[in-house]
Image 1 (cartoon, rainbow, N blue to C red):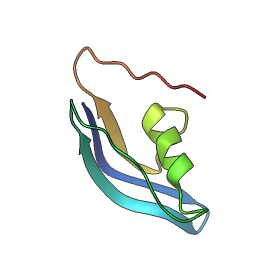
Image 2: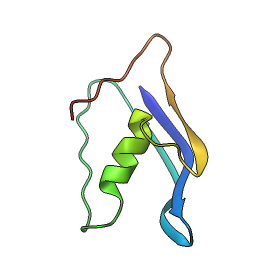
Image 3: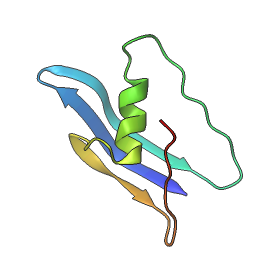
Image 4: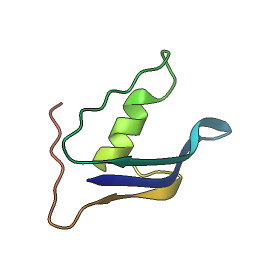
Length: 70
């Protein structure tokens, strides 16, 4: 399980997303959709730990790990 709490990402004055709260639970399949430049790839980089959020936190469940295929 991945829990996203109050995550925001901002570059200078441009806010890509603000105060995102999600819980990705076991047994489900999720998709991220949006316009070009909306921040989809940045959100995934943030969840994977490749990039730090401006605010908020991303937590994995106890004993869980996240793998990324580039």
